[in-house]
Length: 227
Image (tube, rainbow, N blue to C red; front, side):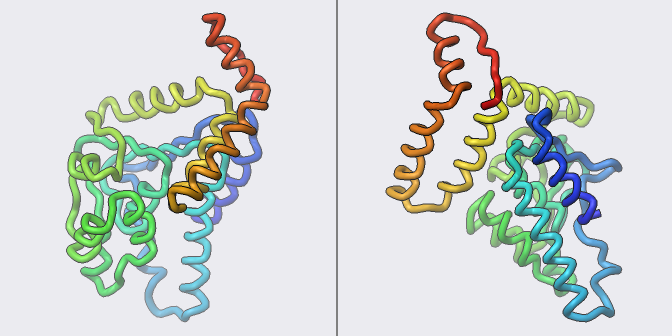
């Protein structure tokens, strides 16, 4: 499945007709993480391959130009929680629950730790990782792991509405913004500002920026050329 997702992300990144990607679970739950049957009785080479592939998949979510939204129902645990944390945005239903429960089976969630720590901060992440407890959707929202909590019956509609709202923008400018966000977010303030001022200067020279500003000044709806 990870291999198939990597292939799909490659194809989506190259498809200029796609502005926003929504990742949904096909069943009752969003994602329970790795198949534990693959985690026993094998060697370092096999385990390394699994986590090399998983890390590649997670990093691609940040690297592709399209914003990625997680639509979460049921549970999102371990690598499933990592996937939610790594997506750019997340919408969850009221009964959704999030956990990094590896500590309970002797396998600390060190790879989910990277994404979760960046999403919710050190103290909350440490609690999640050290206790393995389930965090309800409302608490996950308050911590910043997810953006919105909605009734289950409205989950798909609300996620699609968010995706469509984002898709109103230029695909090219969305890509500039997403890539710029991750390029500056962990830099010192002065480096981040240096990066941002040069990026916005170059953005101003693009066709869509000029079209958008002109439309704003003339009270018109902009038409994007995605360049």
